[in-house]
Structures are given as C-alpha cells and as structure tokens.
Image (cartoon, rainbow over all chains, first blue to last red):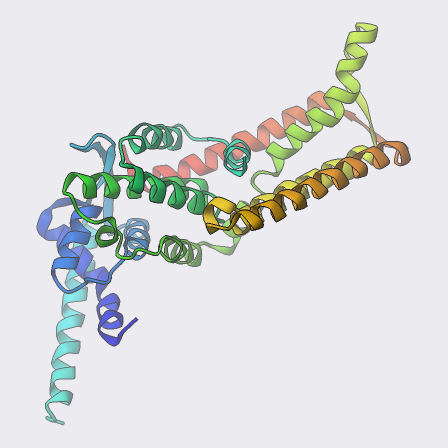
Length: 109
Length: 246
C-alpha cells in the first residue's frame, strides 16, 4: 500500500460518516462509489464492510434492511446523534491537524 | 462435499441468517457464469473461515448485492471489489473482522459446534448401538445406557476429525486452490487412506475398549444439549438484534 493510500485509510472512518451524513440514508455500494470517485480508488470492500460493522457497534450509524430494486434485501445506513457528534469531533480534529501540518510544511515554525 | 458438510455442521440457527442464505441461493443464480464462479469462491472462502456465521453470511450477502449492481451497471467486478484477487479480498475482510473479535468470542467460535457434534455422534454411538437394537430386539426402550471407553474415544476422535477437516478444507480444496488434476488425485488418495485408517481405528476401538466407564441417562443428556443449544441461539440472536434493525 502506498503512502497516499495509508493516509486516506486513516481518515476513512470520518469520510464514511460524512458521506452517510450528506446522503441521509445510503448503502454500501453507493458509499464505495463516492469514495472511489473522490480519491479512494484503491479501497476494497474487504476494508469497508468491517468499518460499517464497527461504526454500527460503536453506535455511530444504524442499519436497516430493506428490499432493493435489484431484488435482494439491502442494508441502508443512517447516522445517529452519537455519529453526528463523532463526525463533528473528527472534522475539528482534522482541521486542527491539517492547520498544524500546513504550518510545518510551509516552514512557518 | 466440504461445502455440504460445513453447511450441515454449521447449521442455520437464526431465521434472519436463514433468510439471507435463501436470498443468496435465489439471486446468485441470476449472475452471469463468470461472476457466479467468483461469487461461489468468495462464499466458500468466507464460510470456511473462522468467522462467526452471521458475519460470514452477511458479508457474502453484501457481496451478492455488489455483484448484482455491477451487472446492472455493466461494470467490471474488479472495479467494484477493489481488486481481482479473490483470496486477498476475502483475507482482508477476515483479518479485519477477526482482529475486532474479543478473545472470548474467538474461543466460543472454536467450541460452538461441539454440542451439535456431540448430539450427532452420541446418536450414532449410543442410539444406533444401544437404544435402537434393544428396542427392535426386546421391544424395550432403554434410557440408562452404558458408556464404554470405545464410545468416549470414538466420539472425541470424530469431533477432532470434523474440526481438523473444516480447518484444513480450504487449504486442500481443489476448487479453491485451482489445483491440477495431479494434486487432486494425490488428495483423493490421502482421503482414501484417512478413511481406511479411521475405519480400522473404529473397529479396533470397538474390539479392544469395551470396558464400561459409566452409565448415562440419554434423555438427561439430550435435554442438557438442548438447553445449551437454546442458550447459544438466544445469545447469538441478542447480539444480532443489537446490530441491525428489521
């Protein structure tokens, strides 16, 4: 895995929470599609699916099974209040980190 | 053969898991031949892994949805899965999920089929060797059955055989390893030898280890296994309800 992928993977949880937040209710295929179209080309479902399960277990998202237009049941994810708080906290941490990293990289130390 | 044994031993304890499996059987037949082959490989690798039954079936069901969506949009499955290496794809999921398991869950997953195996092998050893012959010959139903050393040894041996069989099945599977016919013949010979040695073991144990160790009330034994199995069902159902709303 290259450096870019490793950095992206570290921020994956926050990105998935934000995608679900934007879409209100969405499913695995859609989340993966949005991620791939936005720089996460190398991300595999083998990484994403356990992440959804972990987010569910932590109470950040809920999953509802409903019939899809293709036939079988599909899991639709939506953000919980706890998930919204987690996302806000992620955004704050991310902003703080990027600000600090920018300062260092620009030589403003 | 492994697939049938695994499915039988693992059973389908929860209705929701059963529903998922039924859906997979129904809709996977709609996939094109190439996708069906890849999907079957994923199914076998995930089912033979050391994952909990629900984690395994849910991920397989999720993969089926991805395959159907890919076909619907005329997209390459590699693009959807993120890789064309099915083994790496499955291993990534298995490693990720297993790393989040509590060690108690890992132990539980290793021993959860023991009550079911005890039920099957005790029926074979006690039912077919003691209860039914007495019932047919003497028209008498015996509940207190003598347990010989042979019965204990054979049952333990069979549990170990099934355990190792399931453990090593994916590693030696011709289908999963895309092996050559030569390799397949070699494994057929090995299996024949294992079958032969097992038969010899059972015959010798029946002849040599006939001493009675204790008597067992078979109905109490069955009730105990039933209680353990019900408890397992309830625990797994409670865990599952916490994850998904239906």
